[in-house]
Length: 90
Image (cartoon, rainbow, N blue to C red; front, side, top):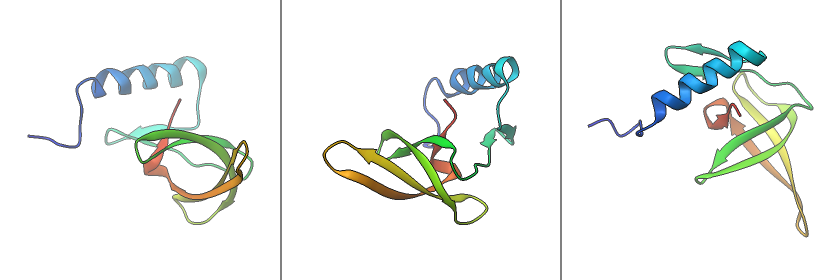
């Protein structure tokens, strides 16, 4: 049993690939995984504890890890180390 995939994953990846083909995008699929790179100021979305969060890249830490700031009303800025593996394309 494969515990890394869920029902609907193939459809999701197909839809994302079609959106990239139609609208363009910074990512490419390599070996079934979306590979992207982001720059300071880019807005990104990522998964954190099962929740999709959004923020702005503050600093590029490594080839695949970013310092991201997320504003939360009544709490101010929260900072995260986000890996490319956590990012979601749309």
